[in-house]
Length: 186
Length: 176
Image (cartoon, rainbow over all chains, first blue to last red; front, side):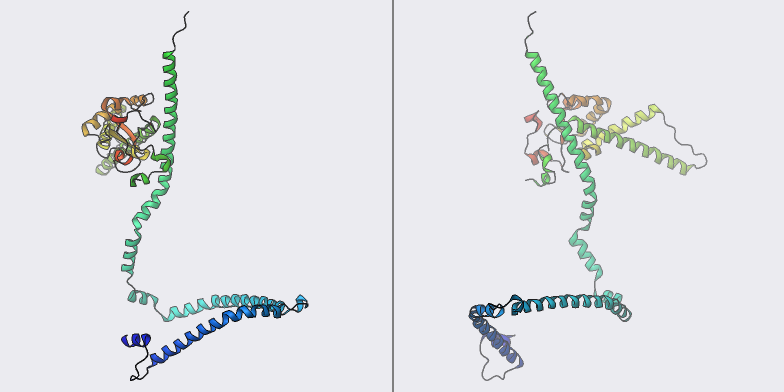
């Protein structure tokens, strides 16, 4: 660990013989340097070459059919079609092969034994129940339907109570007005 | 916002702790009547099963007389209402309709007051109609015994604390 850290932070000590790790580090460092240099050079080169490439791909006074860009686009379309066909073919072959492979594997490997020997199923189930809080989910989902109905009935009851209360209020107001109106002289 | 009120739909929150009207209360009463009827029928069936198991040869279903049935139903109703109001503060019908019976300070009823209220409700059920003209939605039983039936959808009883509303003794007749 320390040895690796030392080689990463500073030059390898002259008295020590280079190891395989040092060689790998050196190669990686050189590769990173090359990528950096390529990026540095490529950025201005791209800016310079872009108009040139544009002219080459779409030369003026040349019919569109005869331009290299048109040929490239046609080639790209053909490539895309081939890629999709190859993908479909691969998926179809995999679909056909997988059941056979699985059947052969089943015959050679005892999955039950592997699972029983390497997995603590009881512990996983216990953790799952503890984490998920299954009883609460079951309670919530089973009571959800009931509670929707109950909530609807309660809200309708409150609405009816309010409507009746408003009617009673109007009736009280009418009664009090009638009591305050003086009787007409006959 | 209070955690209890978070469980209540938004449109119903402002009613929590307010006196309930006759429609909701009547529905709760009907549900309680069904509960008592179902309980009595279950007891009758259970007793018959026991009798049948004890004497299968001489078994005859227990006879039912109208007077005996009515008296039993009344007694069971009083016991059921008393237990429910003195205990959790609500019967099964109250629970379904989101109601709770409390005193004017929004405290649970004591057993004696719960018993008196149960007797009055069973003996004079039409007293509930008084809650229509009453400005505080009080039935005759509520007026006599100083009780209130409130909307209380959350499960526990601390509506006055949750809503921050005064008890009826301080703001009688206030409606949302």
